Amino acid sequence: MTTQQLTEQIKKKKSFLCIGLDVDLTKIPQHLLKEDDPIFAFNKAIIDATHHLCVAYKPNSAFYEAYGIRGWKALEKTINYINTNYPEIFTIADAKRGDIGNTSSMYAKAFFEDLGFDSVTVAPYMGKDSVEPFLAFENKHTILLALTSNQGAFDFQTKSLEGKELYKQVLQTSKTWKNANNLMYVVGATKAEYLTEIRQIIPDSFLLVPGVGAQGGSLLDVCKYGMNEQVGLLINSSRGIIYASNQEDFAQAAAIKAKELQRDMETILK
Amino acid sequence: MTTQQLTEQIKKKKSFLCIGLDVDLTKIPQHLLKEDDPIFAFNKAIIDATHHLCVAYKPNSAFYEAYGIRGWKALEKTINYINTNYPEIFTIADAKRGDIGNTSSMYAKAFFEDLGFDSVTVAPYMGKDSVEPFLAFENKHTILLALTSNQGAFDFQTKSLEGKELYKQVLQTSKTWKNANNLMYVVGATKAEYLTEIRQIIPDSFLLVPGVGAQGGSLLDVCKYGMNEQVGLLINSSRGIIYASNQEDFAQAAAIKAKELQRDMETILK
Image 1 (tube, each protein chain N blue to C red):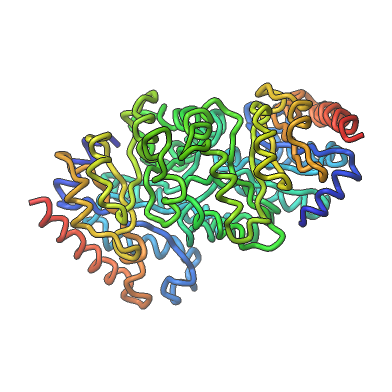
Image 2 (cartoon, rainbow over the protein chains, first blue to last red):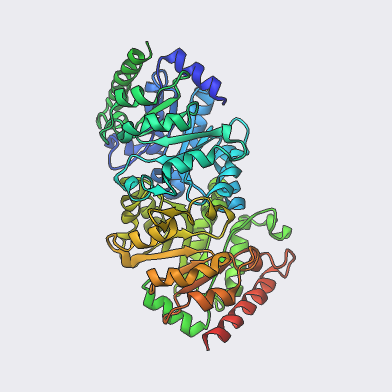
């Protein structure tokens, strides 16, 4: 998918919501545990109930790997289900991968080709040759960790690396990499006040913004400081939507929560 | 496994060799492609031929994920095969994971509990709360990326973060984290000259050292600057051993290459 197609979808749906599909079997409605594949059954119901309210889905690979082969199968079924039934939706493998060149190529192959995701999140610590193999895929997007939503972001990311905070060096340096136009960035909603300076470095890039809701970030602040002319934001909510209810009405409850966020976004877009 | 058990194994086998099981179906002997599970068939043969020469095996998860469910199954069979037949061997999931707290817990569960690895490699970019969930597992080890073997290490890792290179800040800061005694570190063999200063910060920790062989690092230099009284080194070789031959004799050829490295290590240990 191109970023232009993503922007068109945002305008059409009046939404820049991304829903995080982080399935924890201890948190989903217990009646689903009788299903052959409870993880997929949960995702399918959530997706069917919310696809018109969001523009992206983001399964976090950790939640699938934790269930071994069963989890990996559920991930494969989930991405196939989205790609088949809602091909207009942008898909993000939140995997935070990154390794030396030939190994990063294998990860890129896994997520872009084997699973068919539109994008994957990647950690920048190992530098250029660990990220460029992902960038080599046309119409696929590499979402680089810049400033994350957790407390640990202050351990290294916000500290000054040769005169400029590490996360800014990551933004600046990554712009010089081959096929940098395929880059997007993760910036946590809990760090909204940093977005003005971030937009000075990367005015046009899409930002994936986790941390609204459960983690305490503000949608309004993120939009105020982070939105650009093409919107340029994907606001993620996971737990706040998918675990809105753990009863039979879970999908309906998720849709209500997603609708609330979509309505706020529609207001902001006006 | 405890580090004491690892050290005892090193003394017994006169080896601190780790063999990287990075299986690429385009590089393995083509007669194996007829097998039900070529990846596992390859690994099993390599393991049976080399287990007495090495103290650790390190499958890199990228090479398994690239083959989807088939790959994940082969990874599961490989770790089970090692744990059942050669339980004295230290196992490393080279996965370079790391995420916000509750998500890192899921990764830790995946690699330590579900798959049963002794250790996993983790990226430090997201800081303390992304790593501590891994450290919480008793007798399991978290191998933090410090100074990697690739060219991209110079993009951020070797640059000065508030007066000290980023990789040194990672070493120093991580020492203060809860259960820091469960930490080991990745330091590339191509950066052997940095080991003296690294040992000043973490004199006692085990280092996982990739980059000897195909990437050009020197075993002698690594030992000269990086060895401590408990040896404290796991030297990894992947391609140089497992792809020594792509004919019927591949396992035997791998054992010959592993034996060469083991002999060099035995000489150094004297």
